[in-house]
Image (cartoon, rainbow, N blue to C red):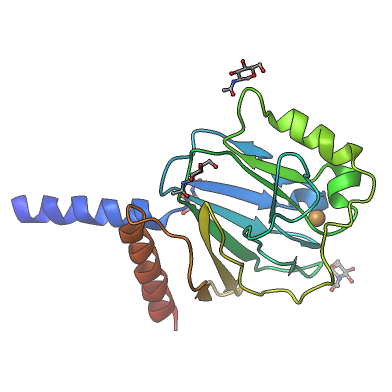
Length: 213
Ligand SMILES: *[C@@H]1O[C@H](CO)[C@@H](O)[C@H](O)[C@H]1NC(C)=O
Ligand SMILES: *[C@@H]1O[C@H](CO)[C@@H](O)[C@H](O)[C@H]1NC(C)=O
Ligand SMILES: *[C@@H]1O[C@H](CO)[C@@H](O)[C@H](O)[C@H]1NC(C)=O
Ligand SMILES: *[C@@H]1O[C@H](CO)[C@@H](O)[C@H](O)[C@H]1NC(C)=O
Ligand SMILES: [Cu+2]
């Protein structure tokens, strides 16, 4: 009895670690939006998962002052194309290693940032609000996104300060079976404190792959 309940507790912990703490839908209803556009109360080690459900968008880190330009050394999902009648959707997630500063993101598909204000914020502050960030985005003239060129979909994100990232593509077919592949990025800026969770996440992802194959 005691043994069983201990197992249950361990199992609950594992489930909590595997689940994304925050889920963001990118391109919901074929709109150029992040849903929700901002999240607060994100804590050290939390995972933010982005699910791309239409068109071809990206989650690209920027700065508060230049919303539509990629931040040097920032994290980036790359463009994640989705077919018109797709039944499976790419996912990309980051683990938050440093909550001292807010994190700012945009979609690098021009002109989504400048024309649609397609931006996203983690832990915006009283002085740097999401609304102010988005207003800067729509006020920016070019919205070219700061890329030298386009890149292929499905590429793994670039790790950077404040978070580590991984890309997962999952496919669900009509009979309910699924398969997924995970490509954790190398050299992620993972803090010592966050490491056990990342290890657990990676182990969990490997387990999922193993189970579904
Ligand atoms: C995020 O999505 C995953 C998979 O659909 C789910 O297991 C998890 O509970 C969700 N987390 C939240 C906070 O909604
Ligand atoms: C998607 O489905 C609609 C309605 O079934 C169809 O008209 C359209 O051609 C499909 N598009 C693609 C790209 O398969
Ligand atoms: C966390 O972010 C703050 C604010 O940007 C920075 O001063 C600090 O050096 C960062 N800490 C780590 C461990 O990266
Ligand atoms: C916000 O801005 C005000 C006025 O510039 C300043 O006094 C305050 O310290 C700032 N708050 C934070 C949390 O940075
Ligand atoms: Cu977009």
